[in-house]
Amino acid sequence: MAARGAPLPCGLRGPLTGPVAVWHLLTPEFAPQGGGVADYTRLVAQGLAEAGDEVHVWCPPAERENTAGVVVHQTLGAIGPADLRRVGRELDAFAPPRHLLVQWVPHGFGWRAMNLPLCIWLWWRARVRGDLVDVMVHEPYLAFREHRWRHAAVALVHRLMTIVLLHAARRVWIAIPAWETRWRPYALGRQVPFAWLPVPSSLPKCPPCGAAAAEVRARYADRGRPLVGHFGTYGPAVAALLMQLVPAILDSRLQPAILLVGAGSEEFRRQLAAMRPDLGMRAHAAGRLPLADVAAHLAACDLLVQPYPDGISTRRTSAMAGLALGRPMVTTRGPLTEPLWHESGAVVLTDGEDPVRFVAHVEGLLDHEVERQRLGARARTLYAERFDLRHTIAALSAGDVP
Image 1: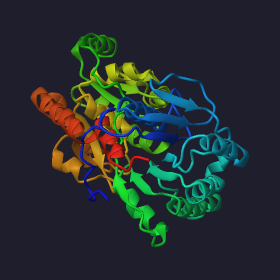
Image 2: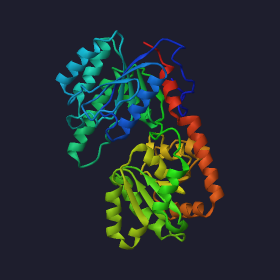
Image 3: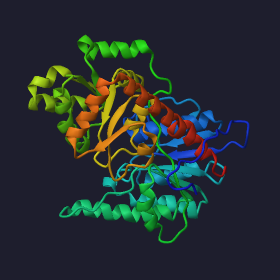
Image 4: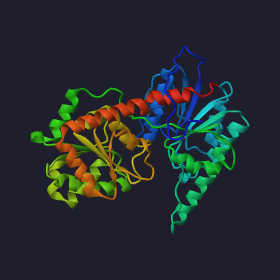
């Protein structure tokens, strides 16, 4: 088991240095579907294939996209019992033991976020068919909330699902260390190894050319105006934080423009313009873009603002995108924030409940180009040393090869 608080070490296994592993990645979504799990699974599948392994992805039907060296089986259907029996028969055509890597988000597998039959099927695959089941936990389960009875019922079923999964799993990978604390009690004494596997950026590996970023900048930041960016999906919790911060940033002394990138950005801008029509000319929304265009848009920004209600953590692919591109970033600390964010000095951390201090940090960075460059260099170094996809592939490949 990896030491708590440190990702597993790097060291790629090349295609000729050992036996070829056969991977079966079970996921509720796969690129080109939108979603962080879809992008993550594509990256991992492609990385394992490039390392010389045989890779199969099992997912529901969706638009097809060829991923080099990866066989995609769109046979999960609605992920009901009949679908699982069909997938089981297809898996049985492979030599045992089959190595299943489950991309776990409890709300992602249909059945109104309560697909207990899937968990029982995975337990059966492990205990009866002898498959090796590993689980990558992107999200653990819903929290209980007072006076929301249906929500509480779903949260209870999620915990039952967790118990079954932990009795099926050979190993559990976690996107952030906090998930081990939440999941381990449901092992009910069973000794299951947990290991931290931070989520890498889903953007293209190489930064975009200067010309692409310069073109984006010229489009959104006229007359040399500073350009502040945000990348995300604009869910309710993050959008509420942004609705406090963005007007204050636009009202600040340097009068920057702001570029909102990602699905949901256009609706957020419409709400902002309705609340503050005077800011509309400096608030821009690019919407959902191809990943290469996302990279160009983020690279065009002087800095990024990435507030999170539970704090920045290594499961936040939007933050990883900024790190990988070497963008200076102002973000928030919270209960899920790992110590490395403070220790590395690669981002500016502030409290989410203090918008005045957040905006002051933005102003300070916009005033000091040298500090922005220093912060960007630290961000790029931190990403390369801790979060690059090669670390993910090395950690997975270091396990037992079936």
